[in-house]
Image 1 (cartoon, rainbow, N blue to C red):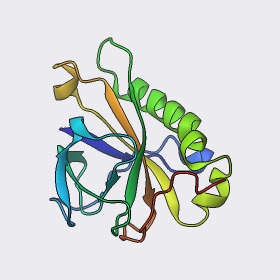
Image 2 (cartoon, rainbow, N blue to C red; image 1 turned 135 degrees about the horizontal axis):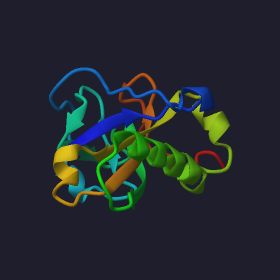
Image 3 (cartoon, rainbow, N blue to C red; image 1 turned 90 degrees about the vertical axis):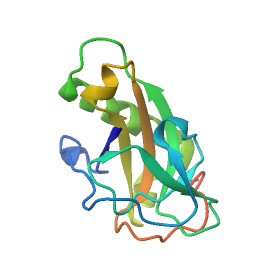
Image 4 (cartoon, one colour; image 1 turned 90 degrees about the horizontal axis):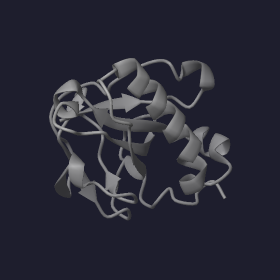
Length: 153
C-alpha cells in the first residue's frame, strides 16, 4: 500500500497534498503491484483513492492517463511525512526534464501534471522507501495513446 499524490506543476502549489478522488481500480490491461512498477510503464491512475497497492498497466499505445518516469528511494530514518513530501517533490521535479524533455513547461500547459506514489507509515515500518514519480493527465481521462518520453524535446 502506498500513497498517491499530485505534485502540481506550479512552484507555488508544490506544498499542497492532494490524492485522487474515488476508490477502486478502473481501466483495462494488467494489474501490477506498485512494488513491481518500472520506468516507462503506462498506467491508469483514475478512480484511485489516496492509498493504492496495485495499478492497471497497459501498452503505451493503448489509452492511458499516466506514465512512470522515475523511481528512487528516500533515505532511511524515522517516518516523517512532511520531510518525505519535500524530498519527493524535489526529486520528482528535478528529474522530470530528463524523461519528458527540457520543455516541461510547454508539456504541462497541454494538460499533464506530475504525481507520485510514496510509502505510508505502515510500509515504511517494513522497509519501504520507494517513491514512484509519474506524469498524468490533469483531467484524469484516458487521453494518452503514446509515451510521454521525449514529448518536451
